[in-house]
Amino acid sequence: MSYPRQPSRYLDDDLAAFRNMVASFVDLEIRPHADEWEAAGEFPRDLYTKAAAAGLLGLRYDPKWGGGGGSFLATCVMCEELIKGDTVGTAVGLLAQSEFALSVLADEGSDRLKEEYLAPAIRGELIGAIGVSEPGAGSDVAAITTRAVRDGDDYVISGQKTFITNGTRADFIALAVRTGDAGPRGISVVIFPTDTPGFAVGRKLEKLGSRASDTAELFFDECRIPTGNLVGEEGMGMRYVLSHFGGERLVISAFAVGIMERLIDLGLEYASARQVFGKPLTDFQTWRHRFTEMATRLEATRTLTYQAADLLDARHGSGDVAVSMAKLYAAGAVQFVASEILQLHGGFGQMEESAIPRYYRDVAGFSVGAGTTEIQREIIAAALI
Amino acid sequence: MNIAVCVKQIPDPATPYELDDENHWIIRPEDQVLDDTDRSGVEVALQLAEATEGTVTLYSMSPSGTLQGIRQALAMGADAAVLIDDPALKGADALTTARVLAAAMQQEGFDLVIAGTESTDGYSGIMPQMMSEILDVPCLSFARKVDAGDGSVTIERQTSDGFDVVEAPIPALITVTAGIEPRYPTFKGIMQAKSKPVTTLTSADLGITNTVHQVIRSVEPVAARTAGEIIEDDGEAYLRIIEVLEQAKVV
Ligand SMILES: Cc1cc2nc3c(=O)[nH]c(=O)nc-3n(C[C@H](O)[C@H](O)[C@H](O)COP(=O)(O)OP(=O)(O)OC[C@H]3O[C@@H](n4cnc5c(N)ncnc54)[C@H](O)[C@@H]3O)c2cc1C
Ligand SMILES: Cc1cc2nc3c(=O)[nH]c(=O)nc-3n(C[C@H](O)[C@H](O)[C@H](O)COP(=O)(O)OP(=O)(O)OC[C@H]3O[C@@H](n4cnc5c(N)ncnc54)[C@H](O)[C@@H]3O)c2cc1C
Image (tube, each protein chain N blue to C red):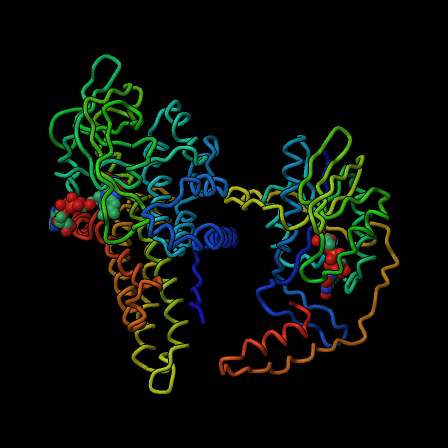
């Protein structure tokens, strides 16, 4: 028994064919290794090259740089399938590169930066990370203190970042730095090569979930990079960061859709096989109704997510609010479903040999990463009130 | 190099096949898929085309349906497709298929023909060899690796204890094994596939009138398996197991 995905007017045959491709990529290249990578706290670097060969890293970008010329909608379909490999961290690691790190570069970077960083990242030869959060600045992006001071043709960068996905092994970081005064107008984005002297990776952080993705603290001690590594204009960094959160939030929403599909699938399979008091769990009205609720929240998340993707694709002004609504709802829905499916599995659900407890831990971060649930509410409220 | 690749559209192997009561032919749904074994053939063709700045044309004989299977092969990167779809060919056997596909290739021109070793649904494993005879070109079968030379092709032919290196002048026909790992169709490939040329021909377009084919008189289900022997372990069950295995001549 598996979940019958509800049709959507946003999807067409091409996206269905693309979904099948990504699903077979996951069947072959990801799920068989999930346990190993989760235990190791890392997935192998060559998964980037494999994903690149399947066109997954540059899906949304200009074919001129090796991209696939795809859309935010296609990105949703890809994320829904990539996350079903029972290793959320792996999908997070891939998307932290392809969407989080590359989108600002693709939209605002110079041709030289695209040639040097975007194209090889799309080919899977370089790993990218996005470096915004600091020990003293998370939700409040404008509070960052990592400084970049101009010195001739260089920026000299000093400061600290934390919670950076792909941090231990990124080849470059799309880095938010303070080039000007305090406040939002003093922020810029630069492309920071991690072989720059003075750069150091601190601890690899142990996390509740997403364990196959590496997360690190980063230290910058008078690191010199060329001013040509500035993305777009100086002082525009805050705007670039905020306007590209949309893609990140969409990715998390689509991950939530994929996880709910996977969990409901696993749940239906278990519930139809597991006999209690002489009949399968699927015969009990309690569980029938709880599946109904799960499926409805899944479809509501899907609809909000596709609608947001469609607005982002159309560069419609309301895209950012739509994507905040999608992300706000998605985080709650996927945490609800993960908890219901955990309960459904009884004692077995507590055992690490099933994927259930892993997903339960992984989705806890969905209301934090890419902007917390409280921040999504702030954004929506600002548009409403 | 102008490379012709045989690809078969088949009913999705994940769903059980049904035979029609009258002719015992497989009922072909609208949305047939690309036979997985043909992905290797497409991969080899694409690699050769990349190495020789050549082109890859797909050839397929089947009801068109939604063309899903053909599109899957075009999405991998093939340039064009020629599809022979004709109700008169319903129930065609391997020889008729070979005649039809060969005629289409002769009409369009080719340097090299690539086919699978055996299809997933028909699995007679003889169609390509018949084609090579009709096309009058050498047949290099069971290739696990293919290299294009100057006016020739060299393959590694898979054998039970290793491989043979076989060379032939082109034009030639090659059948490939499933050992060659196919690429994934990318999103860009999927989008481009829609605008690639697909030519649809009938047997009359190819001047083939005589499409007689084999007749399937009846289909008998495989006898149901009988229940196995249950050996209770009283500490000595292994003796009985060894005995059974010896009788089966597996030890
Ligand atoms: C697994 C993981 C990976 C990450 N990867 C990256 C990465 O690659 N790059 C990167 O830059 N960052 C990354 N982050 C950091 C992430 O973006 C931040 O954790 C997040 O933005 C929250 O910031 P914070 O942790 O400083 O929490 P805080 O901002 O300190 O928030 C603490 C609490 O206060 C609430 N709060 C904050 N502001 C308000 C308000 N105005 N009104 C009401 N409540 C409020 C928050 O919602 C939260 O509940 C990652 C985080 C995690 C967990
Ligand atoms: C209207 C119609 C109905 C058909 N119904 C059936 C049916 O019910 N069952 C059935 O098995 N076949 C059917 N065919 C296809 C055709 O009859 C078979 O392909 C043919 O008999 C070859 O048999 P095989 O698959 O055993 O070939 P094999 O020798 O096992 O195939 C070896 C390789 O040859 C190539 N090849 C084989 N057949 C084709 C093809 N048709 N097009 C392109 N390349 C090919 C593939 O690369 C394959 O891997 C139908 C065709 C038409 C037009």
